[in-house]
Image 1 (cartoon, rainbow, N blue to C red):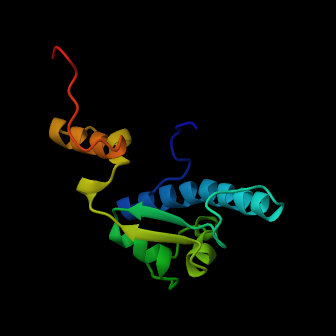
Image 2 (cartoon, rainbow, N blue to C red; image 1 turned 90 degrees about the vertical axis):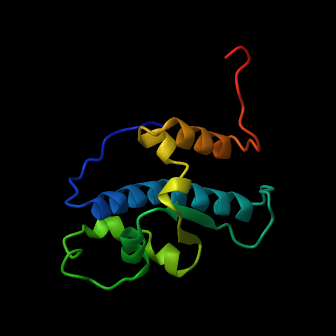
Image 3 (spheres, one colour; image 1 turned 30 degrees about the vertical axis):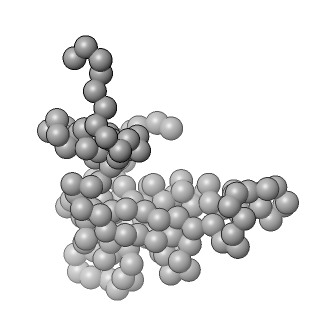
Length: 138
């Protein structure tokens, strides 16, 4: 995996979030399709459920509204058609987009400077630690 700047210019935070969601789901859908194809060819993919689904957490409600509601609005009509590639997966329920509070968004640990308490909370959640971990001798 790599990190790189967005190649599109966003006019709002909602649009920036939508571009990031679209970019992420492009990669997720490719992996999901690969897993479906491997399972169809007889490879033992766990779990052996009939359908592989993906749940995405987004902290921007406007972005979720654009992704799940397919109406064109004056403020979103300029969005490129190539950003809407994942909508059929949302309709088919192979991808679900759910709201999460900004304070609970684990991805923020990688993208924002956070206060120490918030950083430790998200780190513990990311690492699946039930109690705060402290280094010895600190």
